[in-house]
Length: 360
Image (cartoon, rainbow, N blue to C red; front, side, top):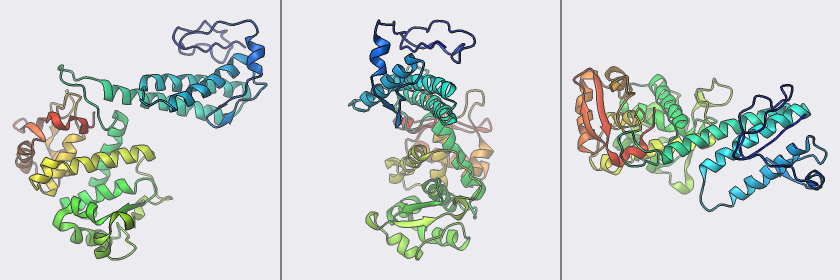
């Protein structure tokens, strides 16, 4: 069995019977050095909390695993991130762990290789979102969400549309934000400031509706939840999201935090708050942010905008009411333009909020 790992140039062709035959080219092959095998056999190393066996064969695999562990630890000490480098490290880890699984028969190593592949893909998406320019030569935008996280965000929006127990916009807004807090295990924490920020003067009535419907459980009264402060936040439960129930969301802890933060930033936008826009208009702000192209335009290019009926349904409006609320977002400098004459909502996010655009 022959295996070559590298950093920049394509690897030599492997024997067809080898586990690495036909694998993707790997960067910068390391030339064999006389005596290197004997020296590396004495080295000790760890990677991903696993000790590399001292007798692991082929020896080039053992050397690669030890060097990769060192490279990841070196990366963690960097003062500035380098996502391109991190993605390359994840790629190398995926290849090395896949071969390690082949020679050892340990299925958990193959699972680790798959996780490394996913990490490489996610890291590259983050690199693209943070470093990519716009299609019309506009400014470089550092986006809060990757494309994968943006797709998960739209899943939560769909969940709120389907599972809010009452049709009012305020109820849907509360369901969306609380579901994001409890997305992982059905429980979360919330403060009175959170609730009044989302729901303004309707917070008490909306919370009581959710409790009465059985959608939400509080440890005390609604009044106590509204009075809670950050140091004594209210722990709440969403029964439908508890473990053992069908899982509506497939994202992890980091993605949940990112998406929740994204929704919070949209609702807390200073110009939207200054205009004191109501729940339907703020829902429309969320919906438009969740369906954008890299240049800030709404909807996919082939769609020519957002389906008016779908946008209206999410915001608990009639289709003929959407233009009025879109105009309010224009006055709040959330949209630069809004046109519904073609039966779609066509427009563009203001440049100041492009980082909040969840790319399609």
